[in-house]
Image (cartoon, rainbow, N blue to C red; front, top):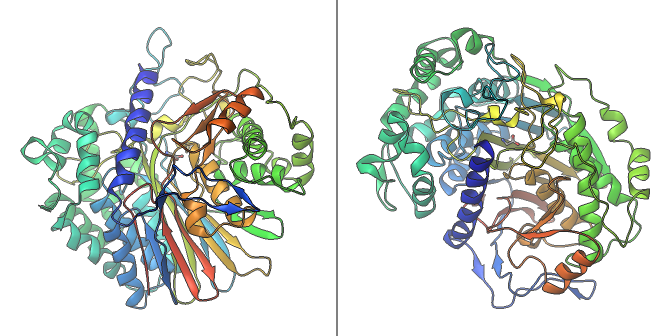
Length: 583
Ligand code: GLY
């Protein structure tokens, strides 16, 4: 059942991707878009979507919604810094991007100050104290859908605690100033066609829960494009958070509403769980690639470590073939495969699991993995490797006028999370519990064994793939801020955007627009985007022993910023209707 649902969710999200791309208000359709790299035409002519980069001298915000981006810029123009803007964007996304914006969810921030200090903040959801190792198994030991849909799927939300912790340490404007744009939007904003369609696509999920029906399906359907959408309960919740900070969410009136909702639907989160929740500062993962430095998220995200392994493996090749060639896609897929094998075996919540991070990220380990790659043939993934991860999340990147940078990826997990809106509070709860391995030691639909490192335990944080990242140039100066949603494809997407800029020498716009592949060890298959590889490349990879599968839609919604001589370039992925804006 769970697997059928997963397939359903994935299909929906991916097929949404196709229409979303055509909804983008900013794409420039070029008749025969090609990128020429070292004399080779590497992007198929059929791939015609181009993003229109924003340029700005001082500061830049890129997010998955133009109104959230505007909220961030508004704060920057009032003298706020990157964290002030990040807090404003987060609360605005809760209002205008309800499928992924998330005071009922969690996330990660990687922040680099203009002075060079890099911090990572973990506000990932935690399993409630009542959670148990086998809570999603039925009496026959089969995995149910309870980790995906409904009250039992929700982990203890971390976003409000995390945003407040980030602001306390790094923010500069008053807290209520940062919530003002979101409150204004919740009191009424014009819905665009992309968001109306997102709600329509998940109508069946939302209709199951009365408070979600009332909030998202007034008159039994999604708010129509071009209409004013008012979310009164949410506006009140945001006002309470503005007035009282996280206390009201974790101990006060909103906590009461969350607990009442849990009791209504058989969920586990208690007042004690909420009271005990803490955001945690972590040591960022620091990677090097051909002289560039990359900071990314450590566990409980697998993002930084897994991307590090991919990059370390590729760094050992003196020459990198051109994007789109069988030789390049093969090397990339084989590096991804090896990194995911380690990810799936080793990684979990660092407060619960011992992990050999130093070894996994060492250049000598990468050399040993590289030596096992056959340049002509795919290496089959051994059995008993795990896989997993939800597909709907959101990323935003910010650089302020002083050069502070925030890279933020944040999630409800699935689109609209668990589908449960907290009655009277107007926000959705996550279904992040599905990012745990529900049945460690038991085969899933692929005959694989899920890893114990990511098994469920009270208070534990589920493994994530979110990869908010910051890249410094060879001189140690801020060069890129990048991230994306996309479940496990987050890791491979961020890696490919970085590789496209650093190795393939592409402009940021082309690096983001370029078709992407994904390999996660198991299923043992290269996924590629529609028209993302030529027929000849697909056939050549098959001849090497790769199983090839074209996605129904597209992969990732990147939000990226790059430093240039003239200031900043911001790129919102042409696959979706986001927004890049600076000044
Ligand atoms: N829920 C998606 C992730 O954390 O990777």
